[in-house]
Every structure is written in structure tokens, then in C-alpha cells.
Amino acid sequence: MTVNELISTGYFKPVSLPSPNREIVGAYVGDLLSWVMGRAEADNAWITIMSNVNVIAVATLTDVSCVILAEGVSLDGEVLSVALEKGVNVLSCELPLYEAAIKLGGMI
Image (cartoon, rainbow, N blue to C red):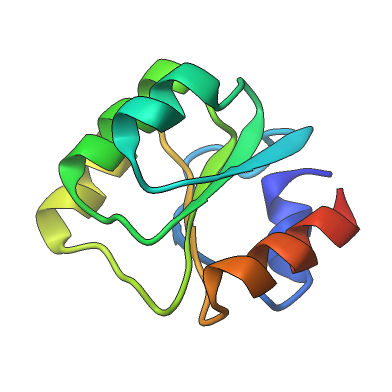
């Protein structure tokens, strides 16, 4: 599944989409950034409620396909600019973390 195909399901909305055709081959859910750095894998979709600039740094380091901001979390303008500059796909959804993970898990 690609990031664009995930968006087409209607549950996840694009926030930053520099690489819409990026493949998603797994998922990781977590908010402790050091934990995510050591455990998220390349091409995972990472679901979190964290929205600071460090999320973009961790997404770049781990080479995830996208960051999904659950529970209606949004990015401020500065963090959005960094996401676009670094080529990080960021999506948002209104679902709680658990429900977002279940939806995503059923799709990939």
C-alpha cells in the first residue's frame, strides 16, 4: 500500500505529502522518541500524538513512510515547513491511537 492509497481510504488526511507514492510495509505506534528511533523500521507508518520538530527528525532517521498524527493533533507552521523541507509525509486523523492502529493494520 502507498501513502496515497492510505489517504484514499478517507480515514487519513494529508498534512505534508512530498512523497505520496512511498510504500508502507508495516506500522509502529509510539510517542517516546528514543524508543521509536530504536524500534520503528524503514517504510513503516508511524502513528503518534507528538507533533514537535523532533518527530520530523526521528521520521528522517528511521526512514518511515509517513507519520500519522492521531487524535486530531496538528502541526504548527514551522514544523510543517521542516517536514516539507526534509521530505517527510505527514498525515492526520481524528481517531484515537488504538483505533488508528487497527484501521491501518487492517489495510496493510
